Length: 270
Image (cartoon, rainbow, N blue to C red):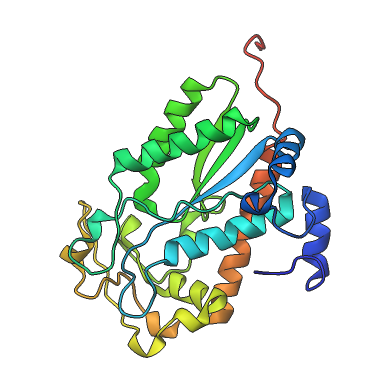
């Protein structure tokens, strides 16, 4: 995890601007009095949501959780918003028969998110950023956010992907088609080479030519390797660092502004 204070003065200055100390605020490492003080001081948390699922023959099962948790930690370091332990299992059954995947039903993820947020709300937190690292979690997280906004009228809940804060076409994944199908591709492989190179088996890297389609399919219906994307063997840690930093910076700026956003006044009229 990047040291935003000593290792990079520019990031240290950005942390000062955005409200962070340069070190992540890890909720699980706080004592209960510290957690209570943190909830009172800044009533917001980041909840990373990942997955344990196949990522081709060259990447570990935890890619979505590892990348999302790392980005959440750096956003916390820059903004001071605490980050809770990641929800590591996701909506992954659509990978089909590839080995290793552990999947939750959408209904189960919705219930887990509700319980986590209900618990945090009872302890004084009122703003919840569900930071998603796996696109097939989107539906469950959107439903969770809608249910919780209705249940807790004094709460704000937003589900977003860690690449949401900049235009999708700027994600250099070497995928031409497939919307959410890009998987174990040039982008993810590069970011993993930056974060966890010891977990990447580049000698096993393989690519898969993506094709245009109207329907979404199970991964085992469109790829025999679990990979969806081109030029995977060209992935580099340098490219991964650039993509990772951009995700962190754009998300941190959005989160810093969000937790200070004034509540709307329903009586205001033009």
